[in-house]
Length: 191
Image (cartoon, rainbow, N blue to C red; front, side, top):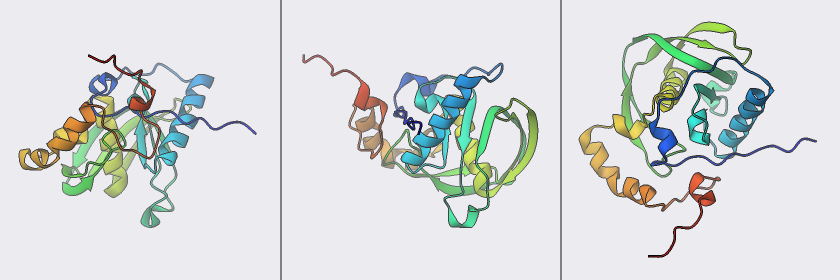
């Protein structure tokens, strides 16, 4: 039986999370391995979405699986490559969290429905209409591809409430039950 690969998840101030990811030009066997590892890493961390930059790959690839939520049990996992939101409708506010910002939650306003053009795991072009939770998770993960974290979408008052925790994450104080980038960094030399 093949060993499942769990990738460390990059945390808040890691540079890869601030960059706009580059478009993919195709898929190959290494892409399939990365996708499998991303799903495994996301599920290991009890997540419902994961973008490639969160695991150190600055490419426009994300995976989503909301089927662990009772009300979305029928939803199939999605692999999304080179996504582009063509249109957005409505708005709703919902509390969000992020595997790259452990221990932080905040209310984010996002469109409630989107039309998304993307490529699937076979690099076939697709267009889909998404609403509710799936639309929210897709938008959250697409933000990662653009170098944006959900905390940047919080209003100033919400942001002030979590600033101490963000400062702790920047300083390397991370409390996450899953492998993360701060666990694999070499220790800083003593000053």
